[in-house]
Image (cartoon, rainbow, N blue to C red; front, side):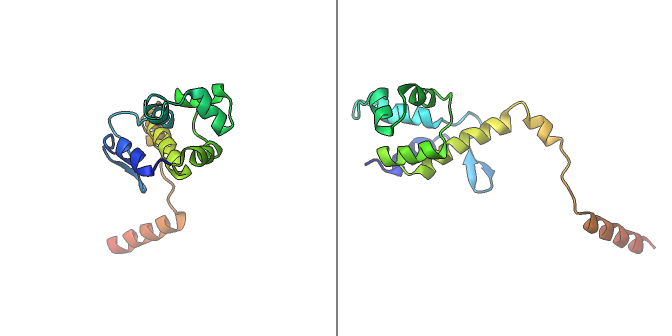
Length: 140
């Protein structure tokens, strides 16, 4: 059974700390996808020496489906994260967090990020009216 510490060490070196809530993602390069982590730890590593087909069979998915995850063309869904937890032994939350880091990075540095930055936040109308009244009363 593989422990989460292996993935933690693999991912720790790339964090440059962009803090979104309680979640950190790299700032200067796209985070490793869950597929890249899977490939590096279980497919390419001679200690394990599994083929994509063997892992896909154990996961109960097609080789093509698993291949698209390995190549970063498909995201790890919650269901796939649960399958990975059962077969590989790394908890589903870890796989989901790895995917979330990639998705957040893509959103923060993607083409729509500049448009999103231009959006005006909502302000409660009642609070604004109260502030305007306070300004007027101070001025008078």
